[in-house]
Image 1 (cartoon, rainbow, N blue to C red):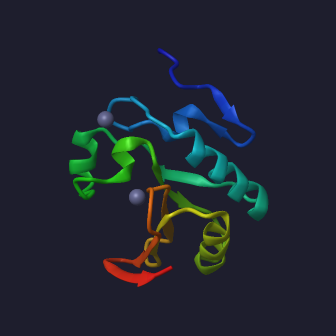
Image 2: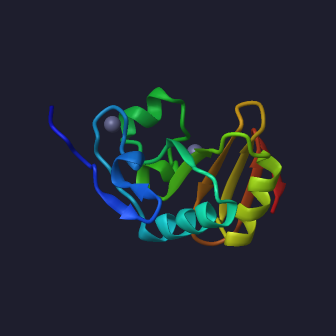
Image 3: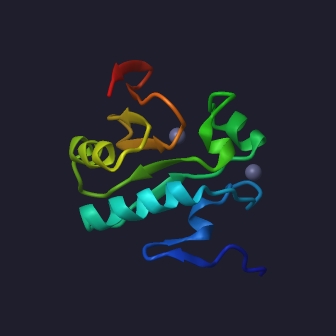
Length: 129
Ligand SMILES: [Zn+2]
Ligand SMILES: [Zn+2]
């Protein structure tokens, strides 16, 4: 078996955690990684990355929006076991992720580092920041 992307890239993260599940390709913004590592330190609990980089085929397969920041290595969807999503949201806002999607039923946050204006949405509804 070929081992790929099994490289520690920050105190709490390895590169494979961000790879595209279909092709193992990966793009990752250092700024995104720094903020995620910061969030991990603040909450002191493991962060599971449901989705990191997506190639265009994978993005289509999972129903991502066409201009998704997942395509640019600038977004992650994260889940933290036994942790209130609303608390996670507060810390994510403090750390300064510019785009935050709050998905209560599925218990995950989308976090991205888009430039410019901040966006916070719940499901498909924009709720400000
Ligand atoms: Zn792929
Ligand atoms: Zn996402």
